[in-house]
Structure formats: C-alpha cells, structure tokens
Length: 154
Image (cartoon, rainbow, N blue to C red):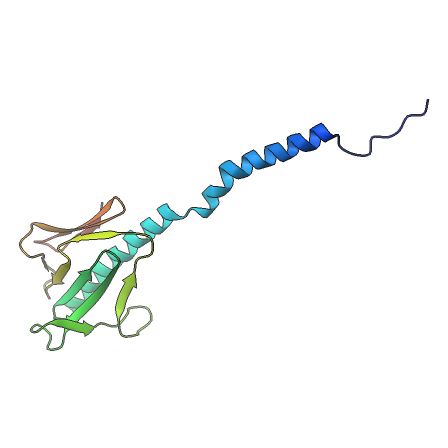
C-alpha cells in the first residue's frame, strides 16, 4: 500500500484555529481601540498646562488673566485695559502664536468650581470665595491653592 504525504490540515484543525483566533480577537482587540483612559489623562494634562499658562501670563504681563471653563471646553482670556473691565480678549496661544487659547473636550466632561478662575499679577488666584478652586475631569482632580496659586493634578 502506497503512503500519501500529509498535504494539508484536517477540518478539526482548521475549526480549532478559527475558534482560537476568534476568542483572541474578541478579548484583546477592543483594548487597542479604546483610548478613553489615555484621552482623559491627556485632557487633565492639557487643562493643567492651560491653568499654568494663564498664571504665568498674568505674572509676565502684570495683568489679570482668567481661565473660563464649561463642561465641554475651556479658554484663557484677558481684559482690554490690563486689570479693569471684562475678560473678553483672547490671548495668544503659546505654541501656535495664533490669537485664541481654547480647547474643545471630546468625550470627556469637565466640572470646574468656580467656572471662572482669575489669576492676579502676583500669581494668586481668585476663586470667588471658595478656599481652593477645583476642576474635575473623569475622576481626576486639579486643585489651585487660593493663597499661593499652586496648581497640582491630584
């Protein structure tokens, strides 16, 4: 009886390979496409840097600046006459040198207490009577000490 060489896979081997690949794809692949924790941490870093920029701008220009927050965006503003009037003038973006320093939040909600945080030329912050200003983004908190102006992400 002649023997034939084994030229392929059996049906059982193919079904097992497909089953194994499908189990791995169902459990592992969604982790590559979910970037929510990374986006949340990046947004906390962005907001912290925007707060620090607003504070440093107030110190450097000797004019008040204001960080204005909503649930879906933030922006840094200043007044037309340095320390009096409404905060209705855009500041220059530090990296693009374009007028307007603002950011839209995508898929992340922000809660600021208070919504308008004013930095004085001394670097201190006015948070409308509360002890410290706080901003919460997806379970992480940014705190601004009212007496020193120290900004820290907790």
